[in-house]
Length: 438
Image (cartoon, rainbow, N blue to C red; front, side):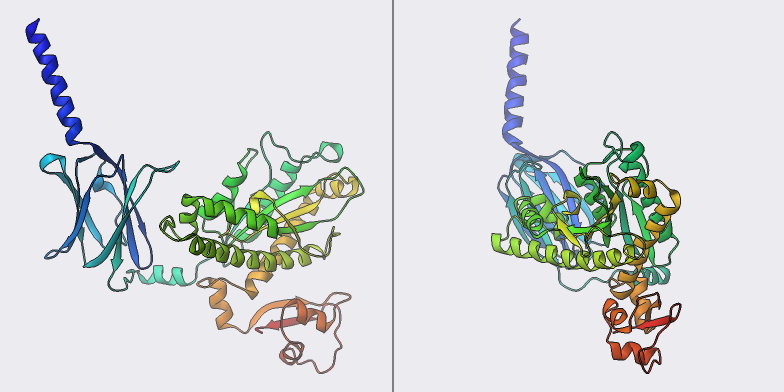
């Protein structure tokens, strides 16, 4: 009995001593690579006194944290494109934890701590600052591909699954109509050189609204196109529409991102803004939002004009609304309402595969026209635009005028006429005009 009591006391003492030596633990290590630095984040149960110092021959950075033990495997981290060759861990006297970052070149560094939030516990952040610009080593084929990448368009078919969307004439379901149009648009973009298309959903299942824009971000989208079919209690309402995010919607979303540390990090390339001033954070987020809205507006205008050549429009200008799927500060986004499914005539059209193909074709034409005029840097279309002075070809249709065409393509009337060797103002239906760089 005494022996059992003695053993229990010894065990309790060992546990007490162990807990006092290891007051905290390292639960994980995360890495982000930025153009001029590498960020290392240590996820800790609590932050004790720490010390960080460099060593040379060979180059390395040492991180010592008091009363902390390692509860994660630090040797399995992906270290490519960083100056870190290897991460080693060890335990020293009095429970001190040591992490060693073996480097392939010397760096400068700074560090700071972050308090616990809803997603993460306390964190110690170390930024390894490059002393010289790191140039990625690319094979010839990889370098060629990087300089001439495809434009990425993510196509979002609205609703899905238990969410049928609007129910139209003869029980035509919005979710079915827009999925079919989305798949047709996907095929058109997929077969066009210089473009890569992705679908947020390819079948009849539901996706959270935030997940739709998150998918666009994960795919590094240049544009998110959300496809819908409108509905209204007045069954006479008709016409297609194209929407971008409203100023009120942009303001509320900017505020939401400003309040979210993790979203802010995503917005500026993985660099958290917690340690930055409120005004700097707001400025960075507003800049991202304004740039996105500008691209969205211009792309939406081209798509609306293209759809207007084959379908009635609800309004003759791009509309604004606070649709949640459009609320992505760093991803330009537009929402296309292909018609009123509650209108008997338009529901009849949208029920026909041939009409859906025409709608997909016109959305495609508008997107292609926009990106030919304003291709993102580093894309195949940007390279093609530099190589050739012709960015598009316009086939004259009834009612066209040279001034309208010049305004539509944002090129001067004089340059358009000179480029196509037109002296006066006479043009004829079916005539092909080459549109030059402005």
